[in-house]
Image (tube, rainbow, N blue to C red; front, top):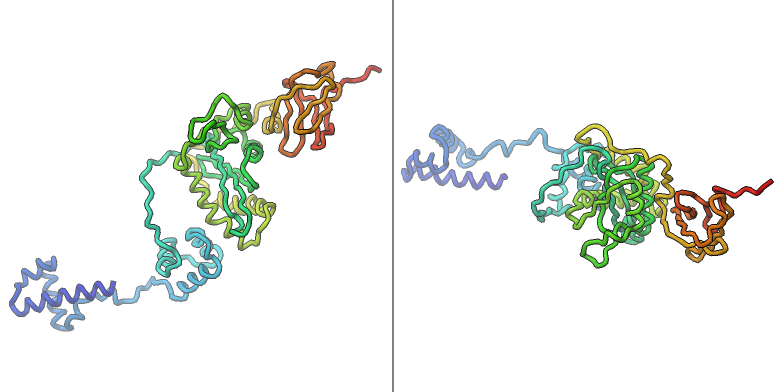
Length: 394
């Protein structure tokens, strides 16, 4: 700014000298400098009294009363270099305000880091897209997605982070780390969300193989083959909405950018290296703080969350179900295990009957016959509970 002002002063000096020597008229000076005749008389007087220095704008040479002290600038730069070097600017700015009593604005923080060469200027511009309006009520549509990332640093293993987010409010209802996103983890997070909030209207996801069956990559999915997730959602009347590109899941992608720009840094500061500790910190600290900062108010008051239908056992809904034919000795073979069915009042024998084996997420198994539960087994195929037990005559 000072250099520009000196250049402008040199230009004005040359023009005024030409006018004093009779080369230009003062009307021509006013037209050249695009100033009024009154202003030209003023700068002529300032030039005659102080020379070229009198043509400078004295405001740029004056100390600004609201200039940030140099010690504050050095404090911010030192904090970023030594402690917050892997934080994004927004996250770093929040830490400055909450933990270090630096109340400067976000644009000031960004400019300071860029000017010091600690943060690069982003020259890439995304293509123009039309914004999709959020759903007006809570529970109308939930986003479910997973992100694979080095959550505990490059030296640690990559984990998958799953999260359910309400489209209307941007509130994260549930999230946890798992070794790999699969049918079990998806059923688990939807189960937890339904237990916590209720049954919602629709679920927006990608086209992962645990959601839909796609015979060939990139082609349309086969709607005649139902996955375990589709079967569970159908039982509760939840519509499955599929996204066909990363751009279609823009809000989910922004969520992961925020998480990836904050969680690994917090784990480093908290010395978190295990999945158990990571999930505890996520549920008790990070998610509540995230919702407090990023949750939005819905356009309309109210909620469309509903209680699960009467008589529906969510543990059976969110289980892995397979049909089996009962052997003549009333046993069932499933995953190299043999389940012995006890006597029941439903039938004299279940031999040659088609039953359903429900593999629960906690390792138990329940066998059902139509709408009736026969019994529940533990992980070692031992009977835990029996229903419709056949009583012996007295």
